[in-house]
Image (cartoon, rainbow, N blue to C red):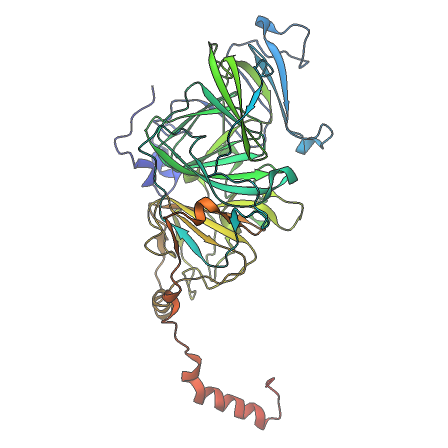
Length: 489
């Protein structure tokens, strides 16, 4: 049985996962002690798992007779002729193949979700304004499960174009009961912020807590239970790509998110004769299929197209140990490629506890404009560089090339004093969902009573200091003129 946490914030208070190993005085362990499941580790591996030993056929995938009367079913997630390193598939050995269902029914449009983010869609909005949202309310007056509680905030493109992304929040107070979901559009990167998610998949179980993330890929059926009650979180959905580990370049072999720390489920089957409902998301629309048995009847499987999870406290931060900042690429946990080899479709970055030791350096986020669209969220704790209204469960957004940075008071304090070596983001994890593509904002988010603008008045006190040095500058320019040199004016 998994242990109960004496302090529910135990894992929020550690600087890094390494603390749990007690300097080698206890046996090492790979999951939080209240996680009830076992996992397989690695990233982009080829895995195999059997709930009943001896089930997976050896030397072939689809024998004339599978042991125990099971059916062989292949899930192919890439082109059949994709190169080996890009070829994604899994073989499942199950009591009934997924084809055993009773047809599809189109469901009414969910006005709170969106999939077409082209500006010609009247339900989305462009804005150069820095926007933010207070934490969205979890429903209390109705039973809302994970799939019914999806609300779209922003995105780019359209899933039928096979390149784009959407960013959602989920707000739920009820477990999915005899109900599963399939995203036929793309991959879900799920970030719980309040309450754990007990996720049942065709490949097995994933227990995902605040401070962890999980990826359920396109076409994989899943069900979300809420062991802690009401839940809230974020989702980054990508179309036309799968998440990858960023290249490390001169960092070498280790650092950032290490492949060995990603965890995949082991086979666990459910044989049940009962009415089930499967919700399919396709082109942003929702459809319902019914069947008279559990969709989680997979006894064994093998493949490299498997859902997985990752504990963000295991992220190995790197950074400057002399002067200046390194670009935020050093915070990238996962990336998804676009058709432009120099710009990602999406990056998932985290800002977690780390040391800041750069000397002779302006330490806060510097004033900048960059090409990326940036949407930030806060899982827990307090994050410097945002207003007091940036709270756990909230959202902050900046579109490409819109200038942003801290208020003048913070700039002044950081410029006047040499800061000490210090731990930053202590007891906090914030994240950024970033893209090379411009975002549009959905009606649901645009009209939300949680929406507020970053107050531009925060920069009103900015002082123009250059004129205070007029005499010094004039003297320099006079000297330049006397020497017959041009200063470009």
